[in-house]
Length: 257
Length: 285
Image (cartoon, rainbow over all chains, first blue to last red; front, side):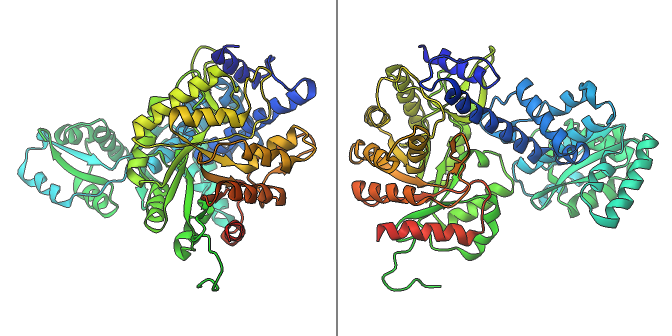
C-alpha cells in the first residue's frame, strides 16, 4: 500500500471510517483504533483548557470537553505545538447555535486567547533612554512600542468583570459574580487590555479614551495620530506614568529607525 | 545531601528525569544530582514566557535532552518547515546534549488539507516507509547541523504488509541516515504485552539483542497501565519490574548509556521520580 494513502486512511479511521491492511483484526483492531481516538480526545480537552480557562469555567467541564472534541474534528491542529491550536475557537463559538444563552462567550474566548498568546510572546526589556525622544522629536515622527503580546479586546459585554470573577473564590467570588450578573443585564461594554505582569498575563479594563489610544498604538499609528484617535479625555502623562510603572512599553522609536 | 560512599548516583550513572511543570520549582530549588533533564521540545516553541525561562535556568544546572513528539518523521506528507525552524531555534537557545523524536507519522491530509494528529501514529516497517524516514531524519539533521536519536514506538495497531522487523528497520535507518536509536524499553514491553507474548521479557530482550552494537544513544523507561482491553503506554506510574529487567538487560548488552525515567501523567512528587532515577542508577552499579 502507498504510505501516504495508508496514513490518510489511518487518520480517517480515528474519525470513525473503516481501515484496511492492519495486522490486528476485528475487536483487536477496533481496540487499537479506539486507543488513538481516546488519546486525541484527551489531548483536545487538555490543550483547549490550557488556553481557555474562563470559557471552561463558564460552560462547565463536561460541555467544555464536548466543545473541545467538536473543535478538534472541525478545525484540527495543523501544527505539532498544541499551544498554537485554538485560534479558531472564539469565532467558532460565536457561530455555535447551541450557545445562544452565552452571547458574551465568544468575546470571553477572545480574551482568553489574548492572555494565552501574551504568555507565549517574546520577552523584552524597557528602554528608558528612548523616552528622551518624546522631548526632542515631533510626535508625528515617533512610535510608542508596547511590549510583545500586548492586546486589546473590545467587547459589548463586561468581559473583564467576567474574567476577574472567575479568578476569585469564596465570598469575594460571590460578590464579583453578583456585580457581573448586573453588568450583563445592563449589557455593559468593556475593553480589556492584556499585558504581562512578571510572567503572567493580566487584564485591565480601559476607559473608552484609553482604549482608543491603545488601539491606535497597536495599529502602529504615530504618536500624533494616536493622540488624535484617543480624543478628548485621554491623559497622556497619567498613562505614561502607569505604563512605565507596569512595564507596558518597550520604548519610543523614531519613524526612520 | 552527599551520597554514601560506593553509591552510584543518578548523575554518576547519567540517569535523567523528564522535567514537567509540577517539578519546575522544586527541581530548581534543590538541584538534585542528575545526569540530565529531558523536556518535550514542543512545550518550549513559544517566543518567550515562563516555561522557556525555567528551561534556561535548568540548562544552567543540567545537560538538557530535547525530546520531540511532533516532527512526525515518518509522515508521507513531509515535515512541517515551521516545526523544524522552531526546533532549530530551540536547539540554538538551549544547546542540548541530545535531540530526539519518534519513528511515527503525525501529518497527513485525510480530507485535502494537511493536519497534525499531535499523536505518535504507527508507521509500517516497509521499504517505502524506511525511505521516507531516512529522508526526513537526514533533513532534520542537516537543518540542525547535528545527529539525532529516533525512538521506537508503543503502537496499538500494526500493518499486515510489514516487510521487516522493528530492529531491522532501526538498524537500516541508523546506518543509512547516520542517526542513533533512542531505545524505549517500556514501549517494547507494551507492544509485547498487547501482542499476547507468552514471555514478554524474553521477547523484549530478543528485540534488544537484535539491534546492532553502537546504535543506541539513550534508553527510556516509564510506567504503563493495564486496561481491560489494552496495555496503554501512559507514563503514569512507577516503572514495572519487568521493564527494569529489560532495561538491565539492555545496559548489559550495550554497556553504559544515558537512561531517562519518564513520568508524564499523574505526575508525582519530585522525590518519587528521584527514587526511580536512583533505581536506574543502581542498574549501572
